[in-house]
Length: 272
Figure 1 (cartoon, helix red, strand yellow):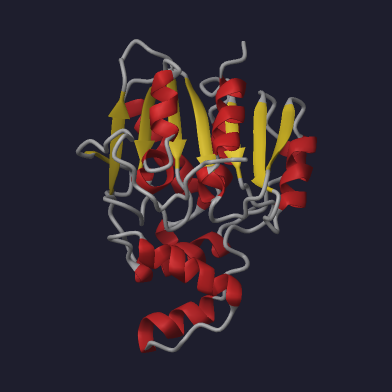
Figure 2 (cartoon, rainbow, N blue to C red):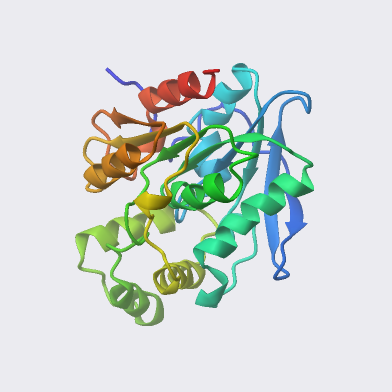
């Protein structure tokens, strides 16, 4: 049986979160970044999902600990609107292009010429762009829970707005899950997260284009109980070197804590 812990459990033996190092991105926003490991080791950049953070998605679940044990240097970032990063309320600040360019800015600031990429949910959707834009710098990637359409498409924005502005109860079950996810992570700003959802929906060419699939090896991993699993499989099949692994017994919100997911990802990242 998979004995992984859910994303919200913080265990004392897990790697601690260092103080953030802030970088400025092109539009004047501060992005919080984190670094672990030896500067001489191969780099893995980890990018979290919607309403999460580096701490919540990658530290509390054991990913950073296991990557360090495998001999990697780990770079993390709190995506704009999340964690310790700036949280603007303008949807125009949250296009896929802006989010992908933030990852490039982190690699440039840390003088990283080459890095493996690990992203989950929104971080995986951003990764679909990054592994193409920076194909010469990202030799291998893991995209977990990647949507094959508009990120957060199942989120009822009108109900979230009414909840944020007026306290109106949310009745849509999927949206309730997103609200619960948002409110359990300290420091989340519902107005910023609402702007993220709006910005992503307004982005041009938002859907992953299978005709522009990444050429390098990419591992796709999605929970067996996740409604987007078939779409994730289709994206994997579109990639010349794509591979798919099903995360048993997990849905979209608890898959990052799966030991199976970590083990499959580590094995994949370590391939020549």
